[in-house]
Image 1: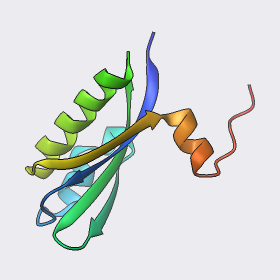
Image 2: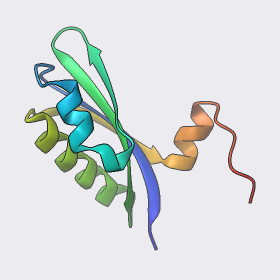
Image 3: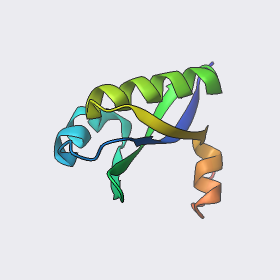
Image 4: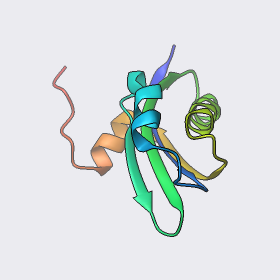
Length: 92
């Protein structure tokens, strides 16, 4: 069984063209944000069997797409991410 996870990965360099990153990660609902100094975050969602598997997959996807090293990662279930950000759950 897999769970949907949402993670935000901060990378050490914001020189990569955000449009290139968003295009490369289009299947993962990516969001790009630039942060000073010379940092960027990419938030995206993946399906994974566990939190550790989600972390590994998110890191790999973002590091390849940005060609930059990650300096921080924050991952939670997408349900928890939505709750923390005030999004109402879909009625079942």
